[in-house]
Image (spheres, rainbow, N blue to C red):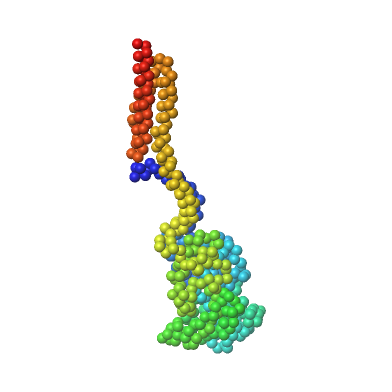
Length: 430
């Protein structure tokens, strides 16, 4: 170890300095605090937001879940940087725009349910004309979708007595006879959806145009609510029902750290990949229904899956290594010549400790040869004696001892030379 330190301390020091400098310019770490725009309290969006929040909290990320008015509000908060993540219904991007927002994929179906009073004959969208219909408040996702579908069916909103009620409030109004039709968007497991299906005074319209609508709009899909799937004992629903469904998609700020996006996608696979009442296993998460451009990290993930490092290491370790690996090439490029240069530099440093004496030795030899008096020659001889003592204290590795002993023998040679010259001078005077 001592020899290693002697040999490589300089390259190691340079490498450490290079690593410190490189770390200063490394890609930033993921944020420690995230804001999720959920939805109304008790709704599917709020529950889903909490699931994703828990997944992030397990990785030591602080999460705030906001109560919002729904999809439109969520998308606007993403675009204005008031939230980092939001749950947004597909189909809104055309009207609201997507600047600053990116999707990481759709995660579950949100069918459009068209409920109506059982005493009314409503078999297709055109039959809603002239009826009292709840289609959601202005700016809501259900209002956008209902308006689109009614318009495609040739039903003018002027021909419908519009109610701004949505969700559970619309369901309650329908059961109380305050409206004739409730067009609502919700997940299939919502309690009030099951209650409406079980109510003999309420009927659920089967969307016979569902396949055509799905072909016309890429963010919509045709889904089937199979007979008995909600309650097999009571056979609810009593028959297969065709529904048209947008999807809930996870939308993030365009600048959100890719590591956070990966965590969200992993959570989406754990939460939704097993299937649901309306979706086969493996259907979600998916980029297919998204109407907002896919985030780069999501596009990579859907093609290749989790990174090798993420599949081997915990999130924090994998994230550091993924950010640091880009430094490997310049560091290795720097390290190779340093390692190759270390042995020659080391040899030069060791031999310099020896050869530096030769200049003084040559000067002393010249001074001793040209000395005019015995006193001058003796002064040079004393300097040679000092040199002998000093070189005796020089430490070098064993492999360089031959150079050191050669130096000492050369000093001894010059000393003997001066002694002979001094003896000749003495003999000449005698």
